[in-house]
Image 1 (cartoon, rainbow, N blue to C red):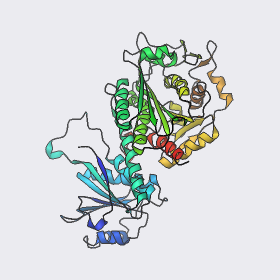
Image 2 (image 1 turned 90 degrees about the vertical axis):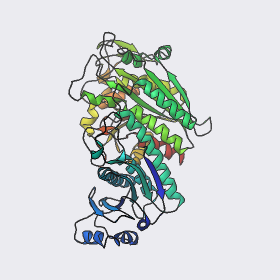
Image 3 (image 1 turned 135 degrees about the vertical axis):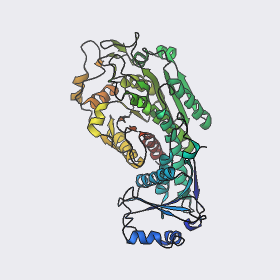
Image 4 (image 1 turned 90 degrees about the horizontal axis):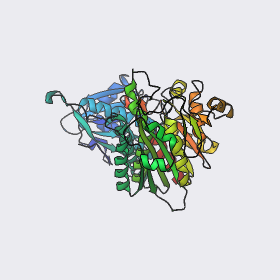
Length: 493
């Protein structure tokens, strides 16, 4: 069954639930609502706090078993001593949802007493994140070994318009992240460029958006030689998908979101090492983020015009694949010497950035799992942020922080451009290992013309190769939250 989120204004002591999860801060004291829950437990919660068995540390949990009615189990979840924010609430709710999944309760109620609209939004996001799974390709275990998946979470909150709005926003973004995660988790033989067309058409039909789809022939007419050189090694049809959301007056300049959609990246002729190459199914995370963001924006009905553009193909070695030393011409006329065929994402994005100009963007933001260099520089904790406009960079950084997807700015100094100068073409597609994330961004900047632009390198943050505790290994949902928060912030202006 599909996962569902509900909002309820019921008093915690009155809920009839297989699991009531209560989020508490460091060194908690119980308020009246939690004391009422503790009464049927004969004061076990208060005793555990008094004895310091439960201290409310971040990710700390303690389970109490109740009776056959009311709250049949009570789970305490610590959120630590940090100031309560959307991200803090999200993490704690995700921990609760993962514990519910392990217990096999099937449903859960969730309480963070005194939660404001922002925290309620975080609870919805976290509950969805902690319960998300991709069991589609796995054989179910024997009946006796199965535990019920968490299919329903009810968030308890105040009966106010602000709380209802916060919950609706959290639910919308969670639905967008679910789309991005599902696309990311699909193996490369299941998620193909055509999958993005199918998902794009579903989103467009749901929310009344306009969709444009280009294939190889149409891209040849557009002279997208940079994008197409990546696709020439695969028989699969490459796809450019553009979704247009009309939330404001037709003359309002749109925000344009752009995503790299490499459904699988072998590296091409410059083939990657075999160990862990299977993770390259996530090289479409930027495009997945755009699709997820467009779903969330459509659900939120934000009064802003938004265009989402993705370019999708696979990077394969074959007798027709692009070779190191080849020179190709992008749709803006610039020629590119291919130094490394594994620096392919920037080649796709180059033509997407040129394509974006026709929409006259108020702001264009691209996202891509672009470089291993950003992982070396920032690890898995921050998005690399680059831009040609300081105010636009600041705007995107603020959006990422608010969304719980923090970024860190890196320079686009002209001195680095020396590394991508070519002897035979206008520029090279890579400047070597040194400052690799910076030279990749500078390469992209060559295809931006006349509009504010920000580049997000999400190679370290779009997926995780280890279990993060609050979410399992695999797709994280980044950069859906950042994209949506950019648009929401513009809508509030």
